[in-house]
Length: 134
Image (cartoon, rainbow, N blue to C red; front, side, top):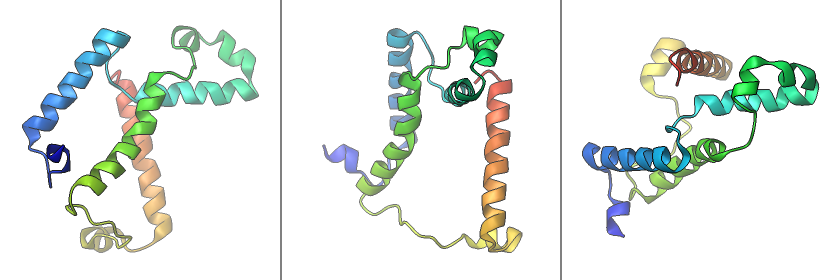
């Protein structure tokens, strides 16, 4: 079990493991690993609480059902796995609330600006992932 607690994994080990997980996903769920559809499904679930008739008649939501599935668990597991990986890496990752110097030099130390740019960046990444079909 010491291999799990390495300071850092070589790129090829992580790549092989990710490839193995991806193959398992293809064979067991008949679907590739992905997260962007989960956010669309979550939006559909929230919309069905407010305007259920729109979700029921929407062509996209007829094809991609807004349901809780294994990809939701993947999305939930990503930050949990990242946290556990950082904790198991024998101190290679240090948690801090201090902003990187490059960020402060470019954008300043405003928490509001940091949140705004993070949200805008997340929206752009999500939009790009949906446009590229994942």
